[in-house]
Every structure is written in structure tokens, then in C-alpha cells.
Amino acid sequence: MKLSSLLDKEQMLLEMRSSGYPDAIRELVDHLSDTVSFKEDTKAEIIASLLEREDQTSTGIGSGVAIPHTFSEDIEEVLCVFGRSKEGIDFEALDNAPVKLVILFVVPKEDYHKHLQTLAAIAKIFTNCEVRKALEKAETKDEVHTIFDSRPSRVALEQ
Image (cartoon, rainbow, N blue to C red; front, side, top):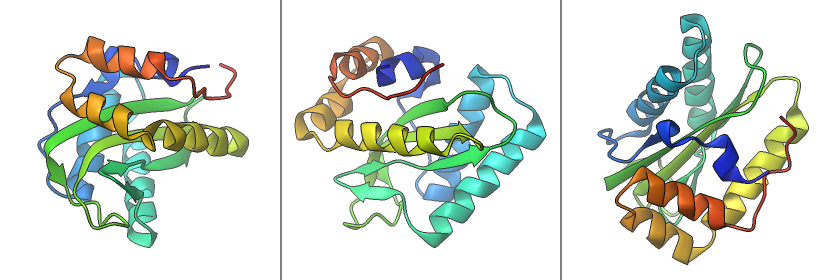
């Protein structure tokens, strides 16, 4: 399954306002909860889990990319949201560079293998410099979706 099938256009935020990772995570989870229905308790648990993860080790993998991720007992399928910041977000990334592209995902707690497969597929897509440049320049959600849809890397998930 391609990443584009997990990431509807509604699950894209092309002009993030946050400047630091705590606000960025809240902004993305808020946006995700507006597009995918889940309880307020679930939303709070997801945010807390993501922030705890970031406090332990940054998910800013370098080259302007962050991949925050966590588990939830309250969801039944992988949920993703993509965010882009023209100004850059301080994710305390490994290379100390500001993050401009963020893909946040949440996996059902019992599906640890899906977590690893999803993370590997997303990381593979974002290691491509041309993909990062294209995502930074894309003007519409349709363009972003096309970029994700054109990538050969697949998320090995059954939904």
C-alpha cells in the first residue's frame, strides 16, 4: 500500500504556524482529529505519548524532516497527517536543522510490526532529496498527494 493511500488530502497541513515541536505536535494532532474522528481522551493520550517520545529522543531525522510516531489502544488503523512549515520548526533534530516537513503517524497498539514497516517506508521516501524539494515547492494538496503517490516505496500494511 502506498503512503498516499494512508494520507488523504484533508490530512495535510501545508502552512503550519508552530515554531517548536510541542506546538507542532499539537497542531498536527488537532488537524488529524478534525479529519478523522476520535475521542478527546484519545487525542490527549496521543499528544502526551508523542511529546513523551520527543522528550526522550527527537524524531527529527535530519535534512528538514521529522517523523513523530506513537501507538494508541483506541484506534483500529494507522492514522497519518502531513505538515509543512516554510519557516521551519525546532524539533531538536539530529542535524540541528529546522524541520520543514513533518509526517506524524499513530499505529494501533497491538500492531508493532505495522509501526516498524510504516516508519521504514516513510523514512525511505524522505531520504530522497528530490522528494523533499518537490514537497517543499508543492503549491497544493493535490500536488503533495501526487508526489506521495508517485513514490515506489510502499507501506506494507493491510487495512
